[in-house]
Length: 331
Image (tube, rainbow, N blue to C red; front, side, top):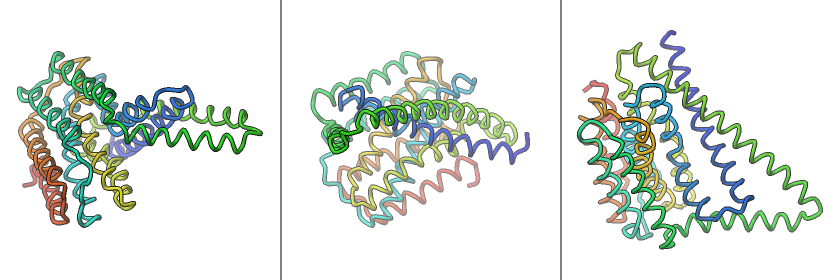
């Protein structure tokens, strides 16, 4: 296989994976509503998983394809990209981000704890089964706390509003509501099936292309994962956050990053780690993990101050460029 073909397969499979994840979770949310699942399950669990579903599926595909080192590399690179690339971009667009919501109650402690657990798991160069179980349990505790404390109100309210709008439409079109219900159900189940197929094939061919590129370019799979895959799988967060900022909803943009990074550190690493011990490649351990710890700390400090300025956004982007160049030993 030539380098050009391998690059094309990589780009196409990554796009299919990301779009397939969007279809799959959109269908799951609608089916969940139709089946009467609670707003908490739909709004918190499904939406929470949705932000990092591409990272999770590519990691699982890597484990089953024999290159488990891409799991930690992908999670590390994605968290770095979410902070430096996504937050940096929206700070530049918004010129000045002011966080009104109190993030100290749940979101920031969750990010800090999840990052510390992640660092504690990978510092010795591998993630064992026991460590993977601890990571998964930590996310389960967060879900339980959110449910019993009512901290998931924003997501639940959004889902309840969707349900109310659906009921209003049904009342206005009661003459053929049963017919339309059937049409919507078919569409939702179709999204589920098509999305699942796209995720499977996208993740499979993405990992295959990583193996090929690694061989052709003589670059470790972990480096490709922490850079190219992490960048690509962070594009949904970038799109959602930019859209939120242009609509004046900076809370949504920041909350999206906080939730996504916590899920990456805990579940994107924890779930694949249940199947095998996850090695951490040299570049990720030496450069990626310290960089993730540092930029997460800076982000938490900025969030506590509740202000992120335009110049900070520019610095974030510059640091991200420096990080990418450092990984490829350009500097």
